[in-house]
Figure 1 (cartoon, one colour):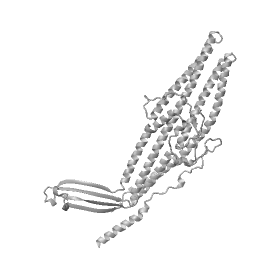
Figure 2 (figure 1 turned 180 degrees about the horizontal axis):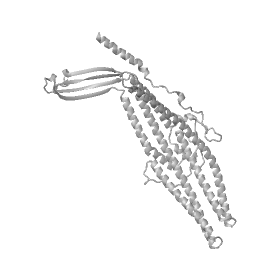
Figure 3 (figure 1 turned 90 degrees about the vertical axis):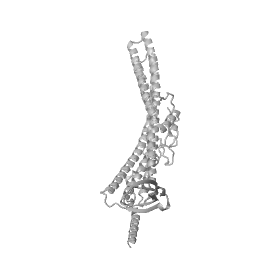
Figure 4 (figure 1 turned 180 degrees about the vertical axis):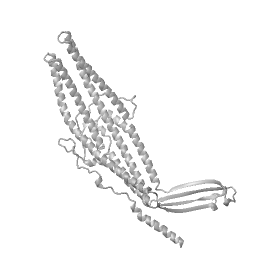
Length: 477
């Protein structure tokens, strides 16, 4: 009778556990808490914008977007950064760590098997208080029945953690590649500025020789010579400042690509790059392509599952065990059939009072979910803002580029006319120097606007998550 009562109680406890299993589920996320996805980008739809909407590209590759700039030196630098940048390597190590934790979480769902063997020297009533040996050898199996999905949800959360780390690795690689591209374009712009300043230096030296010759002939005063020498010295100072800026930027690129500064150099070379036309697509494609948004989403889903894991602590835990082997006081008899032993068991446990530990665990998991939800929302809002910023900046830079080209054309014409009139004595030297300074300033500003277009295009590519089909190329330098 007592045995039947115990069996009934055990079956009732198991039935109750199975009935309550559905209660330990992850909470649903209110869609109202997620940011709304606009139908189109505001700046992409603005009048005069160059950026045409395209269909979402969830399956699109984030491949070699930098090749659209058609610069072999840039290609090599970006590829090196994708492999050797220290931030990328750190993100890869964190991904490996997350995958190891996933393997451990999956291992918890499988039976645990162990073997043991040992020898003991003991004494007691069973041995007549005389020291005796006891040899043993056996195996054991234990298994935790996942009645409430605690182990499965833990494994699912670990899987999402690994996915998030994978996405963060892609994000780190994209960021490093974009940083290299933007720094490289700035370096090439400095090379172009240095060339412009070099041409100006040549013009000033020619002017100085002309003025000195005219002074010796008595046609001009010493003041005119001093003015040209001052202008020449100031331009030489600007050239030296550009050289210093280039050296520092070259050092920064070396670090980005994972090289030591001492043995790294980028040779000066003519730059004839062109800005590729990048379609912005629709806002939903940003959520599909940006790896940092994907990482935030995976982290939020993992936090959602861990709330269910914490809730499962309120329900019973069922463990199944089995063991078998041999034990004998004589080592020579340990493996005899008569020395065999075995045991099987099941343990259903349920904590009754824990001082609020389980509730604290649920509260902490819920707070983590709220935090990850806020992080995801922030990441989405930042992603949309970055795309809109780059679109607005590119549209403005396109107009500025056209205006600056007109300014350079006018300044160059003014310098040519001033030089001719000065040689004929029709204008003063001050007017000539002012025209030369204006042309130098306009030409350098034109280069700065052009490199800003390149950098903003890279920024748009990064904001979109990389991966697009390159369109037509415009705004050649």
